[in-house]
Length: 181
Image (cartoon, one colour):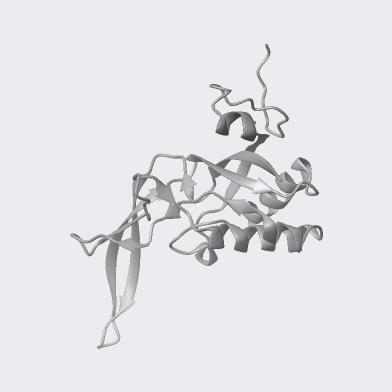
């Protein structure tokens, strides 16, 4: 297995769905004990499996990809307007504020990937998953959380874990790096 770091940019808002304890008009992102936003492994597994089905390759192997729950990124608030039908049949307007990653926001996530799935195949699978399915706690089936893959890089897993490396070696990358160094 090898570890990758992915940078994803949202094309549509990714909305939180956890009710706020103090305000019933606000939905938050799930957070881990350290305060970071977390996305369940199940959510990632669902979209990578859908991406692999669409890609027609690695359909069984992607089930072995392991995702960190922590998501790197800064959330903002998104105001969602919607209508509900009342008892008298009228539609009334409502507002819900969601802690969110907005369109254009970039997040980072790490995963352990089986050696027999190439970095290029993984990028293609995740690109399909992001374009057609997306990831959003509130509801990817409602069109939220669509994304594109900006970068997908190997990390130096063993050296990082042993404290031998202070800087993450991005190593092989499939990103759209356009720097002229």
